Each structure stands twice: as C-alpha cells, then as structure tokens.
Length: 350
Length: 160
Image (cartoon, rainbow over all chains, first blue to last red; front, side, top):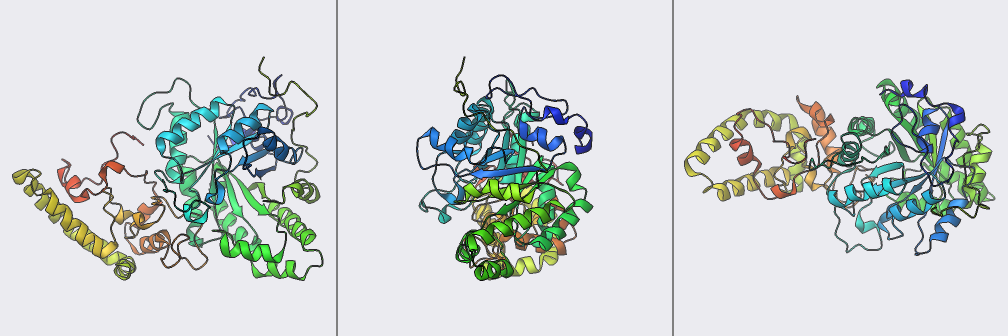
C-alpha cells in the first residue's frame, strides 16, 4: 500500500472522532492498519507531533496520568519508553495500558534488550488487547549504560527482525513458529533511526532496511544539526523512502550548556554541534535559550521535504513541551485530542 | 584477533575471492567426509572451522554464518549481536557504544561490503539467528544440505 492511496481515505473530520467511552477503539478507516488516532492524523496528511513520557519509578497509576496530562492538547501520541538508558522504571506496556484507559494514544516502545521472541510476541498481543494501537521497535541501550549493569542482555532479536516479527503477527496472523492467531494485533508499526552517527552515508540504507522489514513510520534520535538532516532527508526522498513511510524527527529541549555537553559525552548516539553548546553557554537565560533553540529547530525541520512530523523529547523538561509546540506553530492551529479530565466515568468498564 | 579482524575487512574483496574460490572444494570434501564417516568427524571439523574463522574474523561460531553478506565483519562481535545493525549508539569516531576500544562491527561491515562484488547483499534483511546452532559448524550445515550451491538454510520454524 502506498502512502498516497491511503491519504485519500483519511478525512480531516474523522481524525478527532471518538467512541462513546474514550478507552474504546475507534472504528478502523479504509486502508488503515490500526484503530488508532495517531495513524489517522498521519494518513490524513497532518503534520504530527509526538512526545515521550518518563515512566515513573512507582506503582502508582495516577502518576502516569499526571505526567501525561502535561501534554494535553499539544501532541498526537505519547511514547512510553521501555527501560530507556537501561534504567528500570514502570514497564512500557503498563504505562500504555493506563493511558489507553482514558483515551490517550500511546506508542508502545519495544526494546530487544530485555526480552526474547516468546515474551515480545506475547506482550504485543497483550498490548493490542489493552487498546494499544502503535508500537515502536528499538535495539535498546546496552545494560552497561544503566543502573543494573550486572543484568544479562538478551538481544534475541534485533530491531529489524522485530519489526518483521510484528508485521508477521499482524499481517499473517501467526506467530514466528507458524502457529495461527485467532485475532491478529491491529498495530501501526514504527521503528527508529539515527542519521547523525556513523556510518553516516549508510544510515539511509539502514532506513531502507527498516522500511523493507515493515516499518510504517519512523521516529528519529535527537536532531540538533539541520544541515546533516537535510542531507539525509534528500537521499531518503531520492530513494522514494518518504513515499513508503512517515518520518518524524526527534527534537530536544536542552536546559543548559553543561547538560548538553554531558549528554553528548554520555548518552549514546546523541550528536550536538559545538555551535549549539556555545549558544547555550553565551545565553543570559540558558533555560529559555534551550527552548528557543528547540522552537527554531522545529520550524526549520518542518520545512524539510519528506518530514511528516516531530518527536519532542524533553526529559525532565516535560512541562515545556506544550510551550515549544505552541510557539513553533508546527500544528498550524490544530489542537490534538485530549481527555476531558472532569469526566468521572473515564476508565470505568460498564 | 582484533588486528587480523580489521585486516580481513580491509581486504574484504580478496577474502571474498578466496571464499568463492575454495568454498566449493571445502564443501565437496566435507560432503565426501560426512558420507563416509557420518557425524564422527564433526568435532574436529567444527574445531578447524572455529580456529580458522576465529583467527581471521574473531568468529563466534553462531552456526548461521553471514560473513559474505556483512562485508567480512562478523556481526556476532557486536555486543548486542545485531544481525541488521548498526544500532543508533555508534560513537562519533565510529567506535562501539559498549566497547569504546572496538570499531563498530557494522561500520566495518558497510565499509567492507563496498569493496566486495557481492557486497549488495548487505542490504537484505537477515532474520535473527537460530540459537540452537550456537557452537555448531556452518560448513557442515552447508555440506549436508542436498543442494551443492546452497547458502545458509532459512530457519525451519521462522518462515520469514
């Protein structure tokens, strides 16, 4: 299915349409693969914005909802990270399940680090049963980067094989073993890319590999280097990859020059040019400057051919996501759906 | 040995020619040997393969050898054992995220593949390996396959 064919089926007014209970799945539109709102937004041709929720170190479901509410009216989907940085937090599946109960559109991140193919396939079915409509496949940070470096890394699958596995579950309605499913998981399947680290010239081949394996959308690592992104996107457009896949580019809110330098040196795969760090260092109010940089990046990236949306990652800066999205104007006045918090029936099962 | 591994990738075109040249002979010999001796010589043959490929490529004997498709850089040396790498954590100098003293095996793989005639095979997806084959010989697996021109068999249960 090409992207263009599908564009015609997603009408603008359908994008925000809901069932009676916000937790209920939306009716699936023609040519769509999931019941989700995130897929509707992209297929209707809107410029999408997603963000990332930091799963709590807690068993409290309200904490998840409080953190998600910060993004109300500013984002189309919320990524629930899967032990990011190899640190232990509430599981991505549980965070997604809590979010779907009130109608949010979460993206379940699945990393290959902690689970083998038996566990991942089982969790994927469970996630779909709990109302999750979007998944994102990742290799995962190495256990050495986290707070349990003594843990056994699994990496039974890699992110490309995992993407293929999810497509087999959904499209062929079977496990990898060949055993049939009674009902396949209706998921919008995505994967990640990092165009900013070596081998730079082959990163676009890596994107092609992920698309061939079945990725329908892509979320990228932080972009702080627009010229580098432009090169990458130009090659992706030339190869026709942006016709087959929606590409969302990651942007970040940097709080200070010190944090930026620390991230560059310690967080795997983060590329921050010296000019960005110098600008933060020279700023009178670095916090504000960090947000200004993010807003400018968002506006610049939106204009690049082939970019379908932005993924705002603002770890410990979550309260500013709404601010940067609003100031950047990338949603062009569109207000993404958010739950009505005064509705006390939310989450109840009749 | 890390240095030999780097040499093998730098000379990937030569290694490819060597592999294409001797592979049919090795497989024919092994077919003959396995016909006469059955599985009796599996252990020494496996040790021989492990020794040779270990020296040249730091081969980890995954039993699903893909060297000719990965620029002569063994993907099982990746700490995450990614068979469709690289991951997004590669350092700016091309070194591994997990082992800063080791060049990323997939940076090497794309580099090696560029010099090889059949290097385009690196674009194809390789489904994650069959863990039952760890420590087993790929050569014997190929020799026992009935087709003389057979490549590595797809995993029986996976059907991808």
